Length: 216
Ligand code: MN
Image 1 (cartoon, helix red, strand yellow):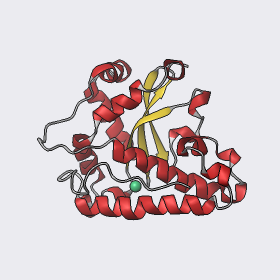
Image 2: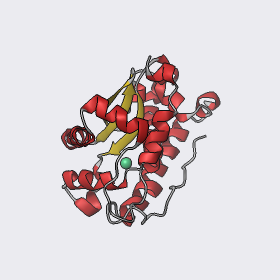
Image 3: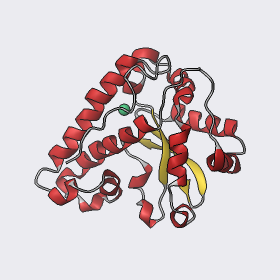
Image 4: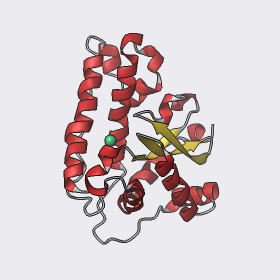
């Protein structure tokens, strides 16, 4: 059985960039529904239901065809949002947030500069038609930006253990993530979101990827 993780901060902690009401509904209603629905879909499938979520969604062919789409959408929703909460953090001083250390070097190496990276990532989010996500992923020793529809994510293309892409940062561009505060202004939401990126957590994820997987 999968469970809804608590937010690692208060609902209002990401104000003024992301508002309290959005966080409440997003976590307590949307994410909670993904968790409930993936559990419902896997009723009686104890082995699948006890896998780590990233293993379940990275190998969807294991899931019976009758519930595969439900598991893809809702298991994906659970994984994606669990990551999303973690890669954000309050920004009380209002200063821009920048990547540090090895991750900062890798970003410069892959995209030319940190600024160029945020530009390309932001425009992927802006241009993702309809609902979906943008990801920063490690891909054979390099960093790449990928966007996916619905609640899909890069783990679904090719499992990490098979040398696939591992997400280390993700941005939710579903309207439910921003509409209450920003209405149709997705670009404003994305611009402000950079202020609450938790680079320490992103670095931890980047550093935690074993070299043989990262450079495969
Ligand atoms: Mn969402």
